[in-house]
Image (cartoon, rainbow, N blue to C red; front, side, top):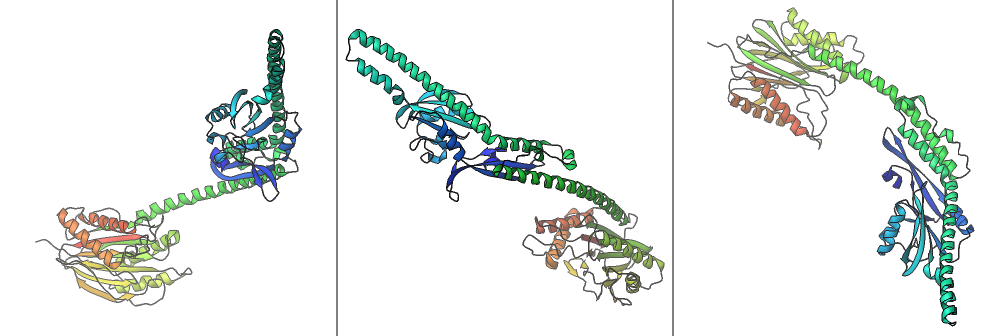
Length: 533
C-alpha cells in the first residue's frame, strides 16, 4: 500500500515474522503499464544483518542507535522502552509523540540534513546525532544521555572540591577541558558510527535501488520501444541467492509478459480499427438505402408520413419503406430481420429489394400474394436459416382503403378521430424465409381523414429498464396517446409527425434509463387526410 500511495519504492517499518520467529522489513516496488498501476512487487528481508552490523560497531555501552523511515516510523531501535522504543511509540510514528521537543527534533532530522541536538528523552536530557540515508529514505539517530557524558567530569570536579581554592579553580578548568574533549570524542564516535551504518546500508539496499531504477525506466519507456522488446530487468543480473534474486526474476518475467501483451494489443487494436471503419461505411450505405427525406411526398396533400430507425448496433436488421405503386396506391412496409449486425443488414437489403420489386412488378394481386412470392425467394439457399418478420400494407389514396398482410410482425396501431390508439389484430402468418409456399391472409379496413396509422418493430414495446421490466404494449399506447395530445397543441405544422416520433422515442429512453438498448427501434407514423374539396 505504501508503494501504491507513494508511486515509488517503499520500505515499510520493521515487523515481527511469526513464521520465521524473527524481525523483518518489507520493500514494495510499484509496476505501471501505460501509466496505470498494474501490480506491486514486494520482498522481505530479515533485520538480523542490520542487528549484526550494529552489534559489531565500536559504540559506547551508554549509547543507543535508532533508524526511522520518512514517515517517522521506527525501523530499528536499541531503546528498550520509552519514547524511542518501537513497541511503545503511539501509532507507529515518532511524529505522534506527546513530546513536542522530540517531534520537532525528528522533523528536523527527516528534512535531510546532518547534525546533533540536545533533546529530552524519557524525561532525561540526551545528546542525539542524526544523518540521512538517502538511498532508502531512512534517518539514523545515535544518542547518549547527558548524564553519561558528564559523569566523568562531574566526578572529577567533586574530587577537586576538597582541595584549595586555587587548585579547585585549576581543576575546574581542566574538568571543563576534559568535558569538551569528551563531547568531541562522543561526537566523533557518533560520526564514525553513522558513516559505518551508511556503508552497510548501501550494501544491503543497492540491489533494491537497482530494481527501482529499472522499474522507473520501464515505466517511462515509449510504447514503440515496448512493442520491440526491453531488457531493463534482465540486464541487472542480480544473482544474490536470496529474496532479492526471487524479486528480480519475478520482475524480469513480468517485463517479458508485458512486452508480449503489448505486441498482441497492437495487433488487436489495428484489426479493431479496420473493422470499425468497415462498419461505419456499412452503416452509411444502409442509411442511404432507406427513405430519409421528409416530407417524402410534398406534392401530395391527401396524406403525410414520417419514419425513423435507431439501430442497437452500428448496422441494424430493422427496415422500413414506402413508395407509390401508382398515382392512387401507396405501399407501406415495416420489417425486422432476425439477428443483428452485418449479416442482418445484408438479409435486410435482399428482403427490401424483393418486396419493392415484387410490388411494383404488378404480377401480384395484393399484399398476401406479394409476401408469398418474396417468402419463396428468401427460402432458397437460406443455409443460415435467417428470417424476417414483415408487415405490408397498400393504401388506396382516393378512398382510404387499406389492405395488409402480416408475416409474423407486430400488430400495427391505429388512432381514429376522437379515440386513442388501439391495435389492429390482423391475421398473422409465419416470418418470411422459414417455410416455403405459405399463404398469407389479408386484412382489409378503411382509413378516414384524420386517422393515424403507427407501424413499429418489437424494439419499442420490448424496451427494458434497469429492473428488467419491459415498456410493453400498454406503455407504448400510452406514449402514442401522449404524442397525439402533444401534436394537437402544435396545430397544422409540417413537422408534427416528426415531433410525434421524437416524443415516443424520448418516452422510451426515459423508461429504460441507464439500461442499454438491446434491439433496433424503428417506427413509421402515417396520417390519412383524404381529398380536400
